[in-house]
Length: 302
Image (cartoon, rainbow, N blue to C red):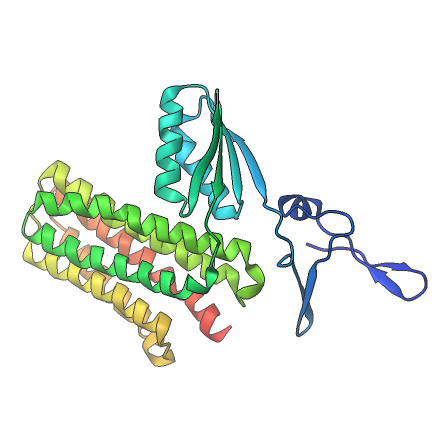
Protein backbone atom coordinates (compact mmCIF):
# COMPACT_ATOMS: atom_id res chain seq x y z
CA UNK A 1 0.00 0.00 0.00
CA UNK A 2 1.30 3.46 -0.91
CA UNK A 3 0.29 6.91 0.34
CA UNK A 4 1.31 10.36 -0.93
CA UNK A 5 2.98 12.69 1.55
CA UNK A 6 1.23 16.06 1.97
CA UNK A 7 3.10 19.12 3.23
CA UNK A 8 1.32 21.53 5.58
CA UNK A 9 2.52 24.86 6.98
CA UNK A 10 5.89 24.63 5.36
CA UNK A 11 7.49 21.91 7.49
CA UNK A 12 4.77 19.48 8.60
CA UNK A 13 4.46 16.31 6.51
CA UNK A 14 1.14 14.42 6.64
CA UNK A 15 0.11 10.93 5.45
CA UNK A 16 -3.51 9.73 5.46
CA UNK A 17 -4.53 6.51 7.21
CA UNK A 18 -6.23 3.74 5.19
CA UNK A 19 -9.95 4.15 5.91
CA UNK A 20 -10.66 0.42 6.28
CA UNK A 21 -7.81 0.03 8.78
CA UNK A 22 -8.93 3.07 10.78
CA UNK A 23 -12.57 1.95 10.76
CA UNK A 24 -11.74 -1.57 11.95
CA UNK A 25 -9.76 -0.17 14.88
CA UNK A 26 -12.26 2.54 15.75
CA UNK A 27 -9.86 5.44 15.09
CA UNK A 28 -11.56 8.78 15.76
CA UNK A 29 -10.63 12.41 15.11
CA UNK A 30 -8.29 13.72 17.79
CA UNK A 31 -7.30 10.27 19.02
CA UNK A 32 -3.63 9.59 19.66
CA UNK A 33 -1.87 6.70 17.99
CA UNK A 34 1.60 5.31 18.56
CA UNK A 35 4.50 5.42 16.10
CA UNK A 36 7.45 3.08 16.44
CA UNK A 37 10.60 3.61 14.38
CA UNK A 38 12.05 0.37 12.98
CA UNK A 39 14.99 1.18 10.72
CA UNK A 40 13.58 2.76 7.57
CA UNK A 41 10.01 1.92 8.62
CA UNK A 42 7.47 3.59 10.88
CA UNK A 43 5.00 1.19 12.52
CA UNK A 44 1.58 2.56 13.46
CA UNK A 45 -0.13 1.22 16.56
CA UNK A 46 -3.30 1.76 18.57
CA UNK A 47 -2.17 0.29 21.87
CA UNK A 48 -3.32 3.35 23.78
CA UNK A 49 -6.87 2.92 22.52
CA UNK A 50 -9.25 0.68 24.43
CA UNK A 51 -12.06 1.07 21.94
CA UNK A 52 -13.33 -2.40 20.95
CA UNK A 53 -13.54 -3.26 17.28
CA UNK A 54 -16.79 -4.74 15.98
CA UNK A 55 -17.73 -6.82 12.94
CA UNK A 56 -21.31 -7.47 11.80
CA UNK A 57 -22.01 -10.59 9.76
CA UNK A 58 -25.24 -12.06 8.40
CA UNK A 59 -25.21 -15.86 8.22
CA UNK A 60 -28.82 -16.25 7.08
CA UNK A 61 -29.06 -19.04 4.52
CA UNK A 62 -25.32 -19.73 4.76
CA UNK A 63 -25.26 -22.80 7.00
CA UNK A 64 -22.44 -24.42 5.02
CA UNK A 65 -19.97 -21.63 5.78
CA UNK A 66 -21.12 -20.28 9.17
CA UNK A 67 -18.13 -21.74 10.97
CA UNK A 68 -15.74 -20.26 8.43
CA UNK A 69 -17.36 -16.82 8.62
CA UNK A 70 -17.18 -16.63 12.41
CA UNK A 71 -13.66 -18.05 12.50
CA UNK A 72 -12.55 -15.47 9.92
CA UNK A 73 -13.91 -12.58 12.02
CA UNK A 74 -12.19 -13.96 15.12
CA UNK A 75 -8.85 -14.45 13.36
CA UNK A 76 -9.06 -10.97 11.86
CA UNK A 77 -8.86 -9.59 15.41
CA UNK A 78 -12.34 -8.18 16.09
CA UNK A 79 -13.33 -7.81 19.75
CA UNK A 80 -17.08 -7.97 19.14
CA UNK A 81 -18.96 -9.96 16.51
CA UNK A 82 -22.62 -9.16 15.84
CA UNK A 83 -24.26 -12.12 14.12
CA UNK A 84 -27.63 -12.19 12.35
CA UNK A 85 -29.34 -15.52 11.62
CA UNK A 86 -32.72 -16.77 10.42
CA UNK A 87 -33.27 -20.22 11.95
CA UNK A 88 -32.66 -22.28 15.07
CA UNK A 89 -30.33 -24.52 13.05
CA UNK A 90 -28.18 -21.51 12.16
CA UNK A 91 -28.19 -20.39 15.80
CA UNK A 92 -26.98 -23.83 16.85
CA UNK A 93 -24.13 -23.65 14.33
CA UNK A 94 -23.24 -20.14 15.49
CA UNK A 95 -23.01 -21.27 19.12
CA UNK A 96 -20.91 -24.30 18.20
CA UNK A 97 -18.62 -22.14 16.08
CA UNK A 98 -18.03 -19.67 18.91
CA UNK A 99 -17.26 -22.52 21.30
CA UNK A 100 -14.92 -24.33 18.90
CA UNK A 101 -13.03 -21.43 17.38
CA UNK A 102 -13.21 -18.29 19.49
CA UNK A 103 -11.10 -18.57 22.64
CA UNK A 104 -12.28 -16.07 25.27
CA UNK A 105 -15.54 -15.14 23.49
CA UNK A 106 -19.00 -15.31 25.08
CA UNK A 107 -22.50 -14.39 23.95
CA UNK A 108 -23.39 -11.22 25.89
CA UNK A 109 -26.61 -10.19 24.12
CA UNK A 110 -29.25 -12.14 22.24
CA UNK A 111 -32.51 -11.17 20.59
CA UNK A 112 -34.75 -12.37 17.79
CA UNK A 113 -32.49 -13.36 14.92
CA UNK A 114 -29.41 -11.67 16.32
CA UNK A 115 -26.73 -12.00 18.98
CA UNK A 116 -23.57 -10.27 20.07
CA UNK A 117 -20.45 -12.26 20.94
CA UNK A 118 -17.71 -10.43 22.77
CA UNK A 119 -14.19 -11.12 23.97
CA UNK A 120 -14.55 -11.12 27.77
CA UNK A 121 -10.95 -12.01 28.53
CA UNK A 122 -7.96 -9.79 27.95
CA UNK A 123 -6.03 -10.76 24.85
CA UNK A 124 -2.77 -11.61 26.57
CA UNK A 125 -0.39 -12.20 23.71
CA UNK A 126 2.56 -12.59 26.03
CA UNK A 127 1.36 -16.22 25.95
CA UNK A 128 1.81 -16.44 22.18
CA UNK A 129 5.11 -18.35 22.29
CA UNK A 130 3.79 -20.98 24.69
CA UNK A 131 0.57 -21.37 22.67
CA UNK A 132 2.58 -21.74 19.47
CA UNK A 133 4.73 -24.45 21.05
CA UNK A 134 1.61 -26.17 22.35
CA UNK A 135 0.19 -26.09 18.81
CA UNK A 136 3.25 -27.99 17.60
CA UNK A 137 2.98 -30.49 20.48
CA UNK A 138 -0.66 -31.26 19.69
CA UNK A 139 0.24 -31.69 16.03
CA UNK A 140 3.16 -34.02 16.73
CA UNK A 141 1.15 -36.08 19.23
CA UNK A 142 -1.70 -36.51 16.75
CA UNK A 143 0.77 -37.54 14.04
CA UNK A 144 2.44 -40.18 16.22
CA UNK A 145 -0.85 -41.50 17.59
CA UNK A 146 -2.40 -41.72 14.13
CA UNK A 147 0.37 -44.06 12.97
CA UNK A 148 -0.04 -46.30 16.02
CA UNK A 149 -3.82 -46.47 15.61
CA UNK A 150 -3.52 -47.04 11.85
CA UNK A 151 -1.02 -49.87 12.34
CA UNK A 152 -3.19 -51.53 14.98
CA UNK A 153 -6.47 -50.97 13.06
CA UNK A 154 -7.77 -49.16 16.16
CA UNK A 155 -11.00 -47.52 15.00
CA UNK A 156 -11.72 -45.79 18.32
CA UNK A 157 -8.19 -44.44 18.36
CA UNK A 158 -8.57 -43.08 14.84
CA UNK A 159 -11.83 -41.43 15.88
CA UNK A 160 -9.96 -39.67 18.69
CA UNK A 161 -7.57 -38.17 16.11
CA UNK A 162 -10.58 -36.61 14.38
CA UNK A 163 -11.91 -35.16 17.64
CA UNK A 164 -8.53 -33.83 18.80
CA UNK A 165 -8.07 -31.92 15.55
CA UNK A 166 -10.41 -29.30 17.05
CA UNK A 167 -7.68 -28.48 19.59
CA UNK A 168 -5.22 -27.82 16.78
CA UNK A 169 -7.73 -25.57 15.01
CA UNK A 170 -8.44 -23.54 18.17
CA UNK A 171 -4.78 -22.95 18.93
CA UNK A 172 -4.02 -22.07 15.30
CA UNK A 173 -6.90 -19.57 15.28
CA UNK A 174 -5.58 -17.95 18.47
CA UNK A 175 -2.10 -17.58 16.98
CA UNK A 176 -3.43 -16.04 13.77
CA UNK A 177 -5.59 -13.65 15.77
CA UNK A 178 -2.53 -12.63 17.77
CA UNK A 179 -0.61 -11.79 14.60
CA UNK A 180 -3.49 -9.80 13.09
CA UNK A 181 -4.08 -7.78 16.27
CA UNK A 182 -0.41 -7.10 16.93
CA UNK A 183 1.42 -7.04 13.57
CA UNK A 184 4.09 -4.64 14.83
CA UNK A 185 5.20 -7.22 17.42
CA UNK A 186 6.08 -9.75 14.73
CA UNK A 187 9.16 -8.90 12.72
CA UNK A 188 8.04 -11.14 9.84
CA UNK A 189 4.33 -11.75 10.24
CA UNK A 190 3.67 -13.13 6.73
CA UNK A 191 5.89 -16.27 6.92
CA UNK A 192 4.81 -16.78 10.54
CA UNK A 193 1.15 -16.68 9.47
CA UNK A 194 1.81 -19.08 6.58
CA UNK A 195 3.41 -21.65 8.88
CA UNK A 196 0.49 -21.50 11.31
CA UNK A 197 -1.98 -21.93 8.42
CA UNK A 198 0.08 -24.87 7.19
CA UNK A 199 0.10 -26.55 10.60
CA UNK A 200 -3.69 -26.38 10.71
CA UNK A 201 -3.83 -27.82 7.18
CA UNK A 202 -1.47 -30.64 8.15
CA UNK A 203 -3.72 -31.39 11.12
CA UNK A 204 -6.66 -31.61 8.73
CA UNK A 205 -4.70 -34.05 6.58
CA UNK A 206 -4.10 -36.40 9.53
CA UNK A 207 -7.80 -36.13 10.32
CA UNK A 208 -8.72 -36.93 6.70
CA UNK A 209 -6.37 -39.92 6.68
CA UNK A 210 -8.03 -41.22 9.85
CA UNK A 211 -11.50 -40.75 8.37
CA UNK A 212 -10.47 -42.57 5.20
CA UNK A 213 -9.05 -45.50 7.13
CA UNK A 214 -12.20 -45.84 9.23
CA UNK A 215 -14.50 -45.67 6.22
CA UNK A 216 -12.55 -48.10 4.05
CA UNK A 217 -11.18 -50.43 6.76
CA UNK A 218 -7.70 -50.21 5.27
CA UNK A 219 -4.86 -52.40 6.49
CA UNK A 220 -1.60 -50.72 5.57
CA UNK A 221 1.42 -52.75 4.51
CA UNK A 222 4.68 -52.83 6.49
CA UNK A 223 6.57 -50.61 4.02
CA UNK A 224 3.72 -48.10 3.99
CA UNK A 225 3.84 -48.00 7.79
CA UNK A 226 7.56 -47.20 7.59
CA UNK A 227 6.86 -44.41 5.11
CA UNK A 228 4.15 -43.04 7.40
CA UNK A 229 6.62 -43.07 10.30
CA UNK A 230 9.29 -41.31 8.25
CA UNK A 231 6.81 -38.58 7.28
CA UNK A 232 6.07 -38.06 10.97
CA UNK A 233 9.82 -37.88 11.64
CA UNK A 234 10.09 -35.32 8.82
CA UNK A 235 7.44 -33.22 10.57
CA UNK A 236 9.27 -33.48 13.88
CA UNK A 237 12.48 -32.44 12.13
CA UNK A 238 10.75 -29.29 10.91
CA UNK A 239 9.60 -28.53 14.46
CA UNK A 240 13.17 -28.90 15.73
CA UNK A 241 14.45 -26.59 12.99
CA UNK A 242 11.79 -24.02 13.85
CA UNK A 243 13.08 -23.73 17.41
CA UNK A 244 16.75 -24.52 16.80
CA UNK A 245 17.59 -23.51 13.25
CA UNK A 246 20.71 -25.00 11.70
CA UNK A 247 21.41 -24.27 8.04
CA UNK A 248 23.03 -27.62 7.19
CA UNK A 249 20.06 -29.53 8.59
CA UNK A 250 17.77 -27.24 6.62
CA UNK A 251 19.75 -27.98 3.45
CA UNK A 252 18.98 -31.69 3.87
CA UNK A 253 15.20 -31.20 3.92
CA UNK A 254 14.71 -31.49 0.18
CA UNK A 255 16.83 -34.63 -0.12
CA UNK A 256 14.84 -36.24 2.69
CA UNK A 257 11.55 -35.22 1.11
CA UNK A 258 12.59 -36.51 -2.33
CA UNK A 259 13.73 -39.83 -0.85
CA UNK A 260 10.40 -40.40 0.91
CA UNK A 261 8.46 -39.33 -2.19
CA UNK A 262 10.39 -41.86 -4.32
CA UNK A 263 9.50 -44.63 -1.89
CA UNK A 264 5.83 -43.63 -2.04
CA UNK A 265 5.86 -43.72 -5.84
CA UNK A 266 7.50 -47.14 -5.79
CA UNK A 267 4.84 -48.39 -3.38
CA UNK A 268 2.12 -47.02 -5.65
CA UNK A 269 3.11 -49.37 -8.46
CA UNK A 270 0.68 -52.24 -8.47
CA UNK A 271 -1.25 -50.92 -5.47
CA UNK A 272 -4.99 -51.47 -5.37
CA UNK A 273 -7.33 -48.49 -5.53
CA UNK A 274 -7.89 -47.96 -1.79
CA UNK A 275 -4.21 -48.32 -0.97
CA UNK A 276 -3.33 -46.05 -3.89
CA UNK A 277 -5.58 -43.30 -2.52
CA UNK A 278 -4.02 -43.73 0.91
CA UNK A 279 -0.50 -43.41 -0.53
CA UNK A 280 -1.53 -40.33 -2.45
CA UNK A 281 -2.78 -38.80 0.83
CA UNK A 282 0.60 -39.52 2.41
CA UNK A 283 2.42 -37.90 -0.50
CA UNK A 284 0.22 -34.82 -0.23
CA UNK A 285 0.95 -34.65 3.51
CA UNK A 286 4.68 -34.84 2.79
CA UNK A 287 4.42 -31.91 0.37
CA UNK A 288 2.44 -29.86 2.90
CA UNK A 289 5.20 -30.27 5.46
CA UNK A 290 7.93 -29.38 2.95
CA UNK A 291 6.01 -26.29 1.83
CA UNK A 292 6.75 -24.74 5.23
CA UNK A 293 10.48 -24.76 4.50
CA UNK A 294 10.44 -21.58 2.40
CA UNK A 295 8.67 -19.46 5.04
CA UNK A 296 10.93 -20.97 7.70
CA UNK A 297 14.03 -19.80 5.82
CA UNK A 298 12.50 -16.33 5.53
CA UNK A 299 12.00 -16.25 9.30
CA UNK A 300 15.47 -17.43 10.18
CA UNK A 301 17.64 -16.05 7.37
CA UNK A 302 15.59 -13.39 5.57
